[in-house]
Length: 366
Image (tube, rainbow, N blue to C red; front, side):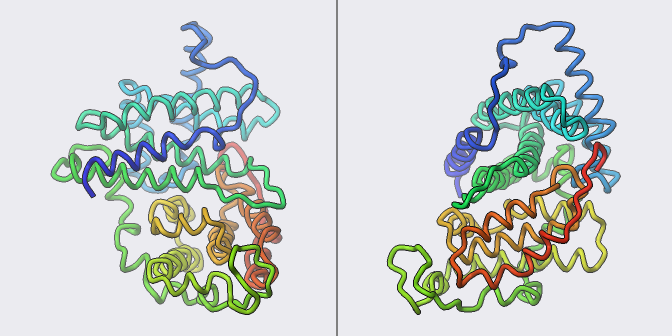
């Protein structure tokens, strides 16, 4: 893929992000707040909280090298990059708001800084270069964590809408890292983001991530499902099996197979007793690594794609203790269950069990 196509994809997902992904409240925008001692004290408080509290709760915290990266190198980079600073402050404010849910001002602060981060990040990726590539990559990671944490706030009715902002932003993260690696990171051991990439070795081998053997526990998700005539999809008739036509499309079949394999690797990692933080890293990388075609199938609300998505959220249930995951399993699984045609509901037994048995114990440090 040439640089122009990278930039097109990056700009598309970033421009598409804020409308639904960031809740809106009636509050004063940070753009309108003048420099003052109150603002400086707030930002100092949020920076301190990020370094001393928030970093310990994020997917990379268990690795000493990446923990040092986020508590030392990233704040230092943020001094010279507004988008990274705003992204850092927004995550910190969101974390604080989880510990103090009755302080609505913290949510307003979070939303302001997230808006600022996204707007500033657009400009940064439009002029991606050797000087700002580290900051742009770290900003992307923090925005994706932000958007994932906000999934808990989604209001899901009878007509389930997939979390496309999170999926697209994660897709954009992949594009930024690919472009950065191609242009500036290879042969540059001094780039801070190389430490992050090196630490994620469990996510660097496609043969392992998408191995056929990894989907053994979820192979039933890829079997034919007979339509009963009420799948609500145009052109689908009773008996022909909605989505089974899609399984005849090699690209769609590969997307389903790879995505189920990736979910299987998360499930196997949990069963093998892998460190919770490493499992969290696998979890947050899901939408970064799955095929683009799978994201299209989810957006089309293909029943099989949504059932598979429900299983992704179900494997997150044991990690509900982390504040940025929380109640997302129950909300997304139940939302998908309500929308699915009847013939697909049997495949939702395990996700529903996980959603009902999960225990959520969120707090300031978890």
